[in-house]
View 1: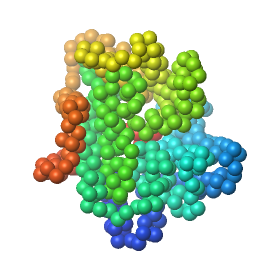
View 2 (view 1 turned 90 degrees about the vertical axis):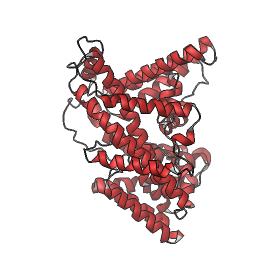
View 3 (view 1 turned 90 degrees about the horizontal axis):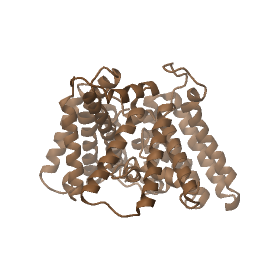
View 4 (view 1 turned 135 degrees about the horizontal axis):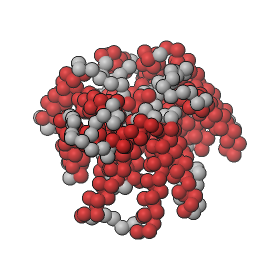
Length: 452
C-alpha cells in the first residue's frame, strides 16, 4: 500500500480517528489490526508468516527471561536462526541455487522482510541482555512487529525505542498532527516530484547502456545518486510523519549524506538506522576496532559485504558492499597515517568532492541489472561523441539538493524543515502536497527500498 495512495491515507485517517476516541486499552489492538490490514493489502498469504514470527519472538523472549542470564544464548541463537533462515530462504535461494540471470523467481519476497528481521532481532537481543523485559501480552509484540509506518522499508526501529512509546500511546494531539503532516508532505514532494522524475531519465540511459555519450551517462549516474537519496529519504520522511501523527517518534534515517567528507562519515549519515544496526549487532560483536588493525579492516569488509547482500541477492550487491568496505578501509588507513586532523578550506572541498564522487560511482553496480550491465555503464562514462540528452530536471533536482545541504550547513534547520509558527510554512506545505498529487497523475514508481 504505497503511502501516496488514497487507501493509505484513508487507513491512516481511520486509525487516527479510532485512536482519538477509543479507550486506552484498545489502542494497541487497534494499531495491530491496522498493521495487519496494511500488510494484507499487499499479499494476504504472508500475514500468517508475519504474525507467526512475532508470536515465536513472544514465546522465545518469555522463555529467555525465565532462564538464567548465562544460559540464554541458545534461545537467542534459535531466534536468530528463525529470522535469518526466513530471510535467507525468501531472499537468497535463487542466488545460492544459481538461478539463471533474468529468470522468473520462484519465490515471492515478503514485503519488508529485511527490515522486519532486523527489528525483531533487536527485541530478542534486548531481552537476552536484560535491557528490556519480555512482554507478557502477545499483542504487545504483534503491535511492535506490525507497526505499519515502518513495515515496508524502515527506518529499522529498535524494540527499546518503540515498545515504550506503544505502551504510552497517547491520543493524537494537534502538535503531533501538524508535525506529522509537515514531515509527510516533504517526503511526498521528494518522492513524487523529484525522485520519480529523475527515475525516468535514469531508466532511459541505464536501459540503453552504451547508446549514450559520456556526458549523458555521467548525468545519469549523478541522477541515480540523487534519485535513490530523494526516494529513500522521502520514504523515511513519510514514515516518520505518519508515525508522528500517531504520537510515535521514530529515529532519523538520513542526515544530509552528500555533505560527507569521507566514506565513514557517509555511513554515519546514510540510512543511519541500518548503519548503526550493523555497528551494534555485527561490527562490535566481531571485535570492532579492539583487536588490531588487520582484524579491524577485516571486520569492516565483512560488515559491508554482508550489508551489500542484505540489500539484494546478486553479485552486483556484493560488489557494491565490497567497494564501500574498501573505501572504509582506505579511509581508516589514511586517517591512521595522516592523523585525526580536520579539513579546512581547499582540503575540505577536495575531501567532499572525493567522498561524493566515490559514493556516486558505487551506485553503478547497485543500479545495474548484473555485472555485465555495470561494466557497460562504466565504459560509457569514458565514451566520446556529442552530448545526446541531459534532462533539465537533473539540474533542477541537483540545485534543490545543493540548496538543502547548504541551508543545513549554514544552520538554517528551521527554515529548511519549515518549522515554527511562521505564516508561510503551512502554505508551502500545502503547495508541496499539491505538487506531489499533480505529479503523481503522470505515473509513479514503487519505493526503491521496498524490494529489499
